[in-house]
Amino acid sequence: MKISLGKKSFEARRVFCIGRNYYDHIKELHDEVPEKPVIFMKPETSLVMEGEQIKFPMHGRDFHYETEIVLLIGKEGRPDTAKKAMEHIAGVSLGFDLTMRDVQRYLLPKGLPWELSKSFDQSAPVGRFVEKERLKDLNDIEFFGKVNGEVKQHGLSKNMINGFDVLVFEISRAWKLLPGDLIYTGTPAGIGPLKHGDQIIAESASIGSFSWKLI
Image (cartoon, rainbow, N blue to C red; front, side, top):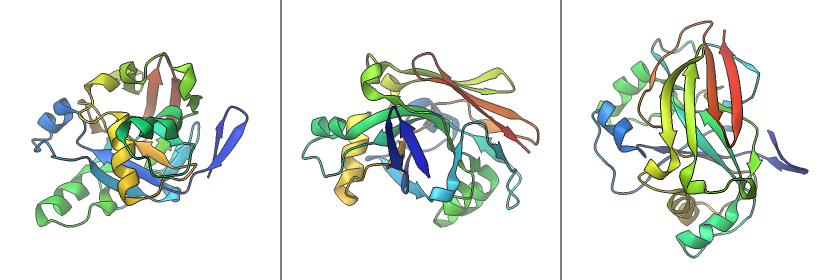
């Protein structure tokens, strides 16, 4: 999928996601705080650009929203340090890690992979990207997740357990960073169910407002 950033265009083929990266979200799910970033992936077919409709999945019933800041990698390589990892970030946006919660509840206790609950088609809506340089402080991004206009989630990037630098660096240790890579950086508390006809909105004063409708 083509991702635009100013006059540049990137081919997004890999979607990295981070689980359990906000203490309040870990608490609401009664999970344990991980020692290192929890990394999983979604296929390119999970991506949904702004304004497109999202079909309600057929393989589960408890369909949840998770609002997240999304990073766009613009530089290939393996940074030597977390500080240098920031040089590989080209843009920032917002999106949703859509999750089949009932499927996840079945898989996790059995120690089974959770792709079926996280990595299905249209599970990663993503908004337009803004250049990293346009944001005053990447560690102070405020964002909201809304359902039908009602605020459900309120997040601050400074409240992440692992910051952008650590996330990019840890991913690069296993996968060489490629231009067009996307990184979903975790969700704050306030996740909840969706139903047919709902409109989900990811919003930030410094990034923009992006919406999708479920059909």
